[in-house]
Image (tube, rainbow, N blue to C red; front, side, top):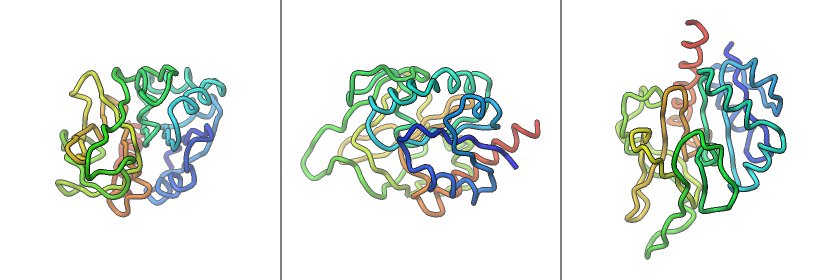
Length: 211
């Protein structure tokens, strides 16, 4: 079984993520231990909440360096929701520096008539890199579940793997670069599409473990 470390920093619905990974055939292990991250075959960084408390908590647990080292080692990495945003350099939501693993910043949706903030509920992805591993076996414009007021704006647009449109604003909904994959939506709440996405991630982990 592929051992996937699910990072516990008191900022995510860890159990629903783990259930999704288990259904996809993985063995998830919730942990805040650097040693466990080192042993794991892959890492998932979930997150629900605000930017500053999240990065402060990661740093207080001394997890910033182990996460960066795991990514640098080539381990498959999946960020979910806030776990996507804190990969970036900074956020309009706070003043703390992000992990800076991906260049760019996090911005807030601009209010406009007829749209709600947060962007909450089901919406369709536009897959900008359809050959990305996470998108295998998905329909052309899959429906997934979002809950967010902020979105990432990568400096390098080539890392954008999917977009979503909310009102007149089309923003990055997922990124992919080398072994890093991260999504703004919640695959664990996105029914069969979300399960397929998690299965695709687990398949990539298996491929790397077998190599």
